[in-house]
Image (cartoon, rainbow, N blue to C red; front, top):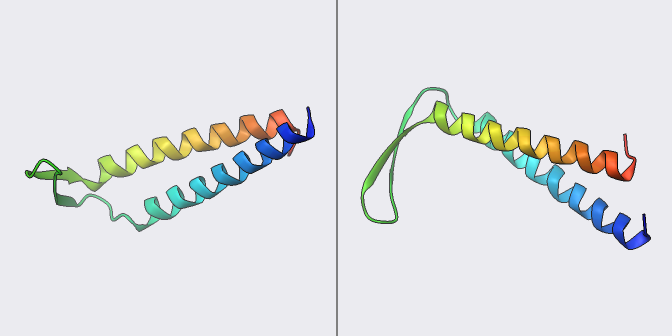
Length: 78
């Protein structure tokens, strides 16, 4: 692996770790089983249960963790 590729992969790893942390913080801040109302950009009200939103964020977090693991394996980091 070339030095530039390694630097780029390390930068990507740092970005993924930051995103992972942000997802973890968001998930921890959301209360369980609440109904949340928000105004949609097209001017109508939407209702969402926080459990569904947490599941979506958890799925995104798992994807980030998989990307981190693959990148670590690629650059040989434990």
